[in-house]
Length: 269
Ligand code: BTN
Image (spheres, rainbow, N blue to C red):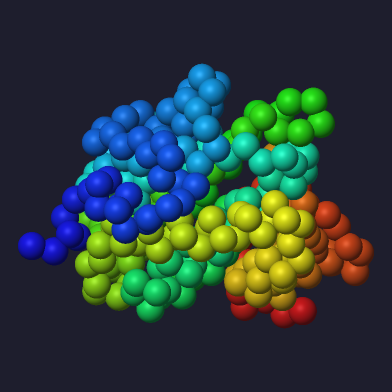
């Protein structure tokens, strides 16, 4: 039997070997949200590197209090607890290195090349493959903990699910391949650990370059909805602090710190 069927924490830990993420590996078949559980564990003093992995979430959450829907036993749903010595305005780097590690893991197991859609999504354009929910607790000028939660559509056929309205895809839908979620998780956690250690050593520039290279927004005309406001412009870059830098219709640079972006096609200029 292949191991595409179920998540096997023992196999994952054995294959992961010595790792920051082997210290406190928490697995639930069903829970409300891996991010919520990871935050609860963080406030109870759980160590850096704690992983919360689930087959199914009853109340998966996305950015801006949206729901994260995912059919159980087919996808990857997990959260990573970190305690980095960094100020809150550097936390975006952690979201990006998880996105880059996911791109690597997905590419190696399936050949698929997802892209990053600012600020936290993974796309096989024009469809969403996954998303990252980053939450942190600040303490003084630093962070007490950061929880990075990844929801990645793996062996699911999103079209079969009527509750999903936004264009959504999965590794299976894109490639026809059913992959081992155990191996995929390892293929994400290993590079993520390497990248995280580099970030802690102050090596951020190269990652910043790479998340710009993998961004589907760079060079595109976009519309950003942020609260009541809609801003339009061409995307120039994504800065280290997570801001999206656009050139607006008047040729002025604008710094966007949050919002929902859509790419405009078929427009002149
Ligand atoms: C988004 O697209 O806005 C982010 C979605 C993040 C979903 C993941 S699934 C694992 C973790 N637990 C949650 O409740 N959310 C994240």
